[in-house]
Image 1: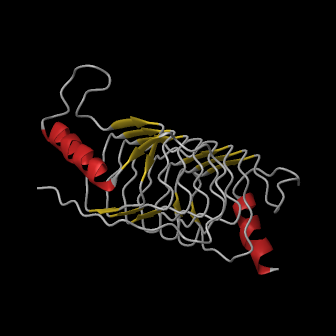
Image 2: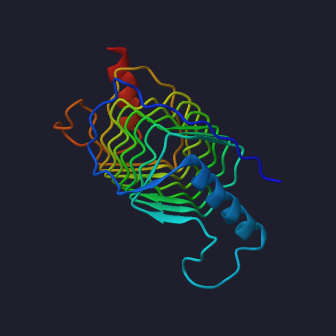
Image 3: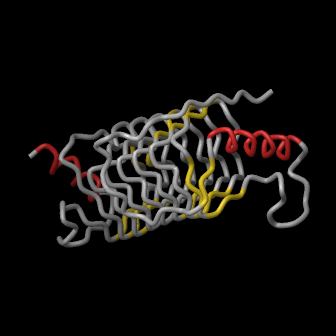
Length: 230
């Protein structure tokens, strides 16, 4: 049995101006919950083969969600393309294998969620929180992750290629096998990073304006700690 709970959340009066185009289609909380229920039934039926996008599989394009809160819900293999989830809250949800490409995730909260092999590439997630989430093999290539909260996340084997991670909270994250390729990394906070020899660091910048020299190797991650302690 799938537990679905939601609450309408009013946008903050001090919210920053939007930087992404507003999708024309608006989906209410009740409509979204109905689609999620159908998607869960489709998954429980074994996700039968058929057309690339079936009527029951949750696949949305250019859709804006009302500010909702959803918890304890299976959202594996959903596809949200160019959707606006900004300000929404997801708690203890499973997004494994999900596609959230080119989405507006600013100030959204994904707390204690699972994103194994999820695709969040080219999305704007500035000031979002993924605290306590499992993100093994997630793809954040070309995403804007400035000021994102990754506190306590497992980022093992995740991809951060051409990704902006400046001022992200990387406290107590696991970085076993994580890929940083031409990534923008800078923070004025002090972190304990759990990297391993399998972590790949190539051509990352470590300064606030990303205009400095590029660095490679695990020593670059040590450089984040060193600059934070100055």
